[in-house]
Image (cartoon, rainbow, N blue to C red; front, side, top):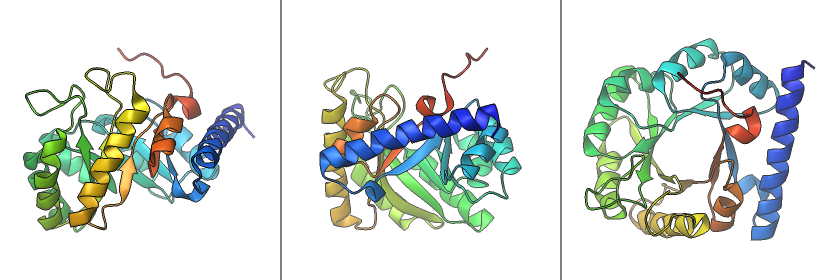
Length: 239
């Protein structure tokens, strides 16, 4: 094995141990939690190695990084997730490769995604990004919609051609009542997921937790965790 493959294999094994231990502690089965590896700033060659090591879900948060990387990896059995804040002018590109967009947080974005999914002849999964730090504006510091906005967006996605409502996503907030209380934040997301599934029973996906707080996400009931640094290493500074 190459040095990079050896390194990634070791990192993946450690993350796998953490997820397994968290599942045991929570009384959950390991297969209830899907690992998504966030590969931002890392090259397509790393994505290729991850695929060889058994990773099936990868995520990006910038279209300018994701589009060429996805194009270079079309031969791999991967499911691509877009997890960053998405501007409508990038939607056509993102719909070209993303199987799931995890950061849907406004009606204008739903309309744009639907239009491009229909044009491309694709069905795109959507997660509503929930901002648990949303203030009076109804939006969070890192995107997302306030909990009271979920129902309206969910109905919009559910009726939109080319889109599929898969569930909810959140990022542990840095400010507000949940700052420093990751597990409480993720438990709140699970309560919101329960509410959502009453009207949209197929929307079972709950994406929460990253390298630093995946254990808290698993304990709360997350179905997907998004891990970058713990697998790929500390990212080089941009700029």
